[in-house]
Length: 448
Ligand code: DSN
Image 1 (cartoon, rainbow, N blue to C red):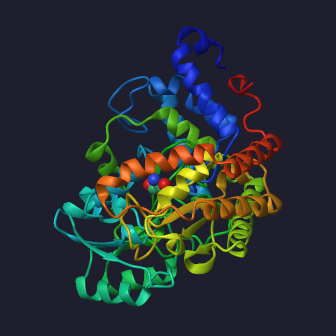
Image 2: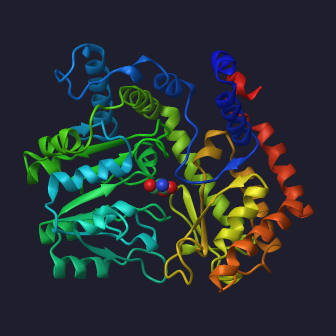
Image 3: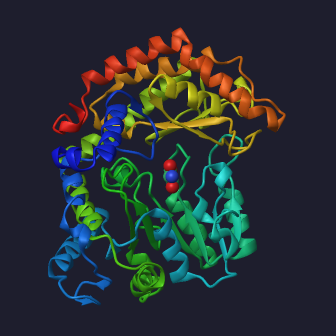
């Protein structure tokens, strides 16, 4: 597959090969990432990339779309079947454009919306001030309690006080099951739309290991590249409850995506979403989704039994949020870099009531979708939890300087020191050995 590019563009080929080697020899523990099947990659890398097809099936602005129409219709039918919804739009380029389209469909600038606060684990597009969604709309954030769980009483009170047009449920750093039913009742009691952004858990929903929002929400959005294990992309689904509230909701969503926000859909991405959805409806995907959660619980157990604190003391889904306050505020940056030195990739993340800032947060977020895709099970989770805990303890004496000017130099020195640290090197070698037992994409020459 890579033979041609290796000759025509060795520079890019070299980078692809380096990235291939990096993922082959390391543990990708960022919970929003996954490794997709060869079929998904093949659907992405073909002539559907080359077509313009603004509009929708049978209503295009360009000729030559008969097969694009078929592939988009097939993808829509698969999405409707997989999530049990009456309407799906599969054109959003990714999750943020999908969420923006929901605003365009439902709200006018200045309308009130409610969403899970970013620093409590929410998403930028749920009304954070740095996103247009927090600037064009009056955003009322809700929070988690000190135990890390969503504060349903606060959500109810805020909803009654502010009467929002829409309420988001969904997050990027929340390790517990989303209370769709409770949020559905709150939204109904104030006449709001409930929009469930299930980007993180959509694969778990199809796999039957996370409650579906479909009976409770009016609209459901998702990315397609996380637990769903497809190409980067987005989808918006309208539920029967949504159509009962507004029979025009499907048309409003479609108009918001195109021509409201986007131009030509990425038809190769659409084809790859179709492949991923078909894979996700196969019985072995149920096993995969269940194993993601089993692995996540096993990893959480290993971390906690090795002295690492987790927000909410555990997990219901594919991710964990590590609370590093016992090691000092802003410690997430150090742990992220030290783990990377041992070939384990996580992301630094704020924790609820973080004593530091989003750039130097006091937590890390990690999860199990990619390592489960590689075939790892509970036994490997136990080892990985121990390695992570050992590294956290190895660097416990580093502290983020309170003087902002000093931070850059301090972190540079920290990186130099950890690159020479023998205990971290030893763990890195063990990680590489583990990865060899769970090969990734053996069929691609690039990794040979
Ligand atoms: N960037 C995604 C994540 O990592 O969760 C959310 O958009």
